[in-house]
Image (cartoon, rainbow, N blue to C red):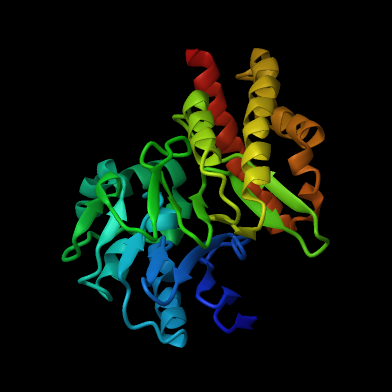
Length: 303
């Protein structure tokens, strides 16, 4: 059942809200998750530029109270809007990785780094504002029978996944997932610099030990076979290492990143449906694939 404003009802008390920043190819890419009932909570808030849309969606769902706001990591597409959004629920605790807490209270360095890394994309996401009133809790100290935070560095050192009876909210621990109308499914690593392969693999293995059933991706949607996708992504990360290590002899060449991407599209079965993406989506994915390859290059050169 789908509502207006990009709200998809997954079950009686779980909703996916699609947030679309003002950039081509970014529809059906950023999703935040809302659990209603007791407890009621939000997983991520999206960027600043979409806070108004998130507020409208919560109003449409008649959500006037949130018990918790969970942040998987503080990259600006997931948490950039937390300052503005937290003003709407100033008494709601925010739960995140302990190293993220200072950046939520004073995001100046985070915003500066985002501008340096993403440039105009960061400006389209919108400037990060500080959290002024809400209590901010270290995820490692959070205790609740309904939500288990699991520290999962890899995509980011400050990444946390959240396991609940409904599903595993995996953030980007399992990469970027797209399901096409054809039924085909796409999976792409999100391994920006600085990337440490062993850390990412360890985080996936930790999640697998919990035997989750459903998996909710930060990008994008839900699957009822979490173990399959976590296992697939683990193998994918190792495949990318082998391909990029083999191509590393050509690093510095003008065609290096293009050659890596074309070879990965040929050899990685999870990228086989790349051509089903729209041209704008292909541009987005090519940008992020290039960034992910940069993460591998740094990792391999420092090994």
